[in-house]
Image 1 (cartoon, rainbow, N blue to C red):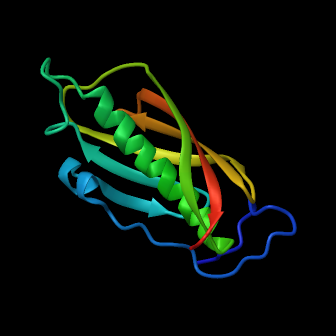
Image 2: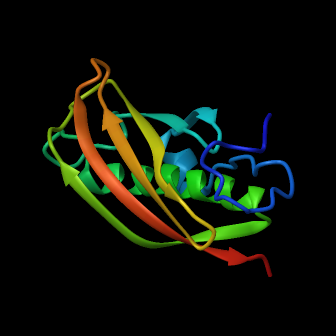
Length: 145
């Protein structure tokens, strides 16, 4: 895998292989699966079933949780190429539509990849490619402890 990205900040030193995603407990319980991971793009899927609220719709909190996870993973992958790590400082979401069944696809792409901050757009779509939710997440890049 190429560690240099067209989004790597000018003058930034690339120090190693990008971090590889490891699912956390919540990710596993929600049924998240990773399809693609790079500085350029992180793509995951999650079933609607098991992540619905009491009215039978995909839970907005589930969308936010998985969207934040995918956006944060994207930030950590970038940070790792600089010898750093990332922590979330802001996330916002707009729910456009819901789903009752099927699988959602979560795609994070960079808006800004800096040496101290990253911002990613995270799109959540249904099986037909219809946008259900748009998130924006900003992460602070920190030196590893």
